[in-house]
Length: 281
Image 1 (tube, rainbow, N blue to C red):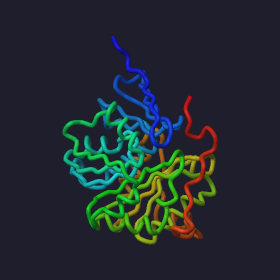
Image 2 (cartoon, rainbow, N blue to C red):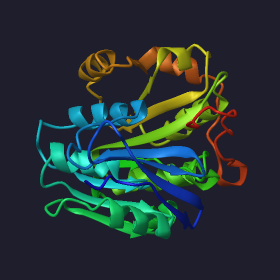
Image 3 (spheres, rainbow, N blue to C red):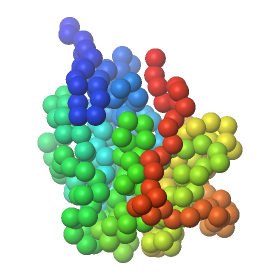
Image 4 (cartoon, rainbow, N blue to C red):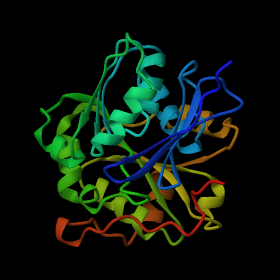
């Protein structure tokens, strides 16, 4: 019997590797320059291996009635993990995926093909440029999971960028972002302040150890013009194999106090992770 073998390819922004999971027959880990980017199980697209991906999935689960389709715009593609999840949990969803690394996108779609019935359209383009050209009120959810290497690019952190995201979202829509930071959370706090210039409702989801400043890690931010179902979201994140906390309301306002919105001219990438923070092997 033939066993799947790793695939290595030079892409636009580094060296990508697809590595098979020995414990799951058709599951793959995608890394770029050694940093884990995505995990996909082709036979079970609802399996979200990474903690941050499950937290994004928890928010997607509570956005609308179970199973109802959504129009989604994904900024950052990776191995198309979240689009596959949404296609499986909300059949009929229309999804655009924008990935700046065209050769990475080619690698993923060649070796990890999308389901035939999934309405997922990948695009090789810059996330902000695509967002600026997108129609008003065209998405129920915008998911931003964009990393240049291990850092969020500066041009995806400003008030001007958030203004475009708010324009593209429908009135009942939700903006989601995967970010990485550590105490004292200067970057995450600035992003909350920036989102607050356009959205009335904000929530932060993170593992308690990250929130307590014990380690560098991922945080998921959610922003909307309407109240989020914090009770349902908190229940799901607390029941996860790696429980997370949902911060919102007065506690989140206290957390953000003193942070200033980011202008394009002041924007910087997210902080460089400490050595080994997201590496493998």
